[in-house]
Image (cartoon, rainbow, N blue to C red; front, top):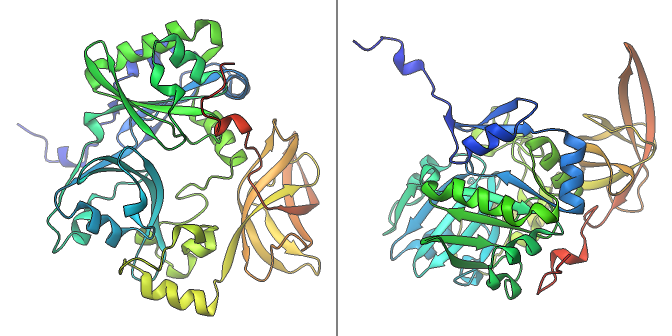
Length: 397
């Protein structure tokens, strides 16, 4: 007989790569990503990060939410959903996107994979099936979540292309950033996209769960001479901040989950103006964003080079008159930049490169708390963006 409390139970699943990630996880550090168990670190966070930036690292992205959107109205539906013009994402290409509520506030960001005629995959951090289904009213479109049907892994770093070459995958020579190619892996289709969340040269590999272990083994066999290592979420977090990439629930609050509606952000306030296309037909949030463009946004997302060597975790940002003008959302001491760096949300009247800003940093050493007021310099571009990220063909390091 089923327990009356059974409906409260939430089963935590293993990804298709779990037999391999579990065997490699020497530190036994894990966390829950959606319905799945994933590694925070395998053997040493610093060394995993070092492998990423100097060789290559593998990260299990199977828990990423994946929605399949197909049917005669797939394109008009997506154009109604997101702020960018999806018609410009050609077949075999991937596009970054955001979608908003009626107030023009960002619900989530993600990537759209144009897989074929009237066939797309939308990947995001959060589950969006309810929002997608509600938004599809009146469209001839089929929407389903296929997260459990696809095993996915990210191969990132300067030797990532060399590893794929060693596996005999020749298509990477012509695979440009944000492009897709499909090859054969022991009789199963393996989709390769030149995408990632590290700001480095890298790829994401997509395969049926039944071939996940085979893919993992092939990567590590081919990468043995190229410094390949597994990488957990802690090292990935370092890389994405260096790349200046935002994360839902960290750098912005998803609008559909906010209790205090004034705490959300629009694309303009997340430095994503380039993703808003007013030349296409109506999309959710368009009227509000048109008004905001005229009125001006409230905030801006800035990248900060912070003086000193202390990470500005959760720091308030002040102007030169000691007025609070914002707060840090993400921060770290960057090994590649040899600097303390941060992403921060500040009042729109502040945050230009000429402004003087200060971070109030609190840190503890052996039970003693200290405070530092560190000068911050606004950085216009990503903190770290190596040339190899965009080179085609990619370097054979």
